Length: 277
Image (cartoon, rainbow, N blue to C red; front, top):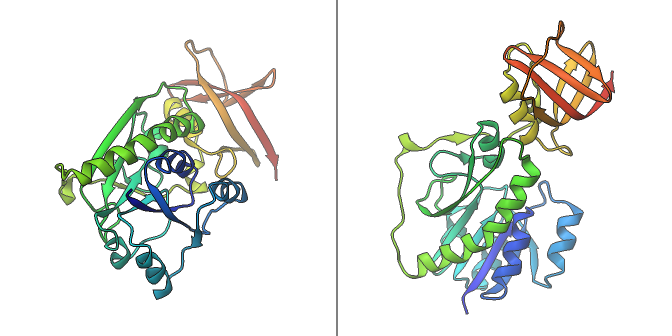
């Protein structure tokens, strides 16, 4: 039975661990304290697997090497892993990535795919090297989304596919199947999204772009927002209207709904929160 070490601090690892523990031996789970929630820790502890926390020291290398893993899987891990650790496994280390290779490398790939209006979302497995998302593509899977699917829905769909992607990728490597390399010119890297990326400028944005920002933003961590007359309004849910109507100003409140006027039409906000300064 192949031995696996999993690096994570992300919800995508829960479904992965559930599936992989039936087929492989999960020797160790390495957690990063960055962005780690009590809820995720609680879920991972239920698997009754040995857990250690990531540290920048020789002790980590020693602990990992002692396990003699066949594979290391990185599932939403926010820290850079050194080459000496990447090279520990008998076969290789694999990054389970939430974006299309080579078009969506780097940070927040699921979010950026939504913001850019993609109708298909891709997830990928990458053979790791010392560069961020720098190794060859192992496998890719995709699923369709519609124009109103938000980040929560996309994550659920992606998380349901990640386990099979992991298993297929491990088999792919064991059977020495072909990997796909891309040149530096072909690769496009995206930054990790921050709160500042969630601000919408009504006078400069299109309604479609604003809608995509809203559905790609996290209600808890970095909700989309606008600023109107010293009022910060968090925008949680929106809908594209089939028909527009006349509005003589940028916004209008009506029956617990907010209508925003962009240069190309009107966007309905049906869930929002006003914060007064």
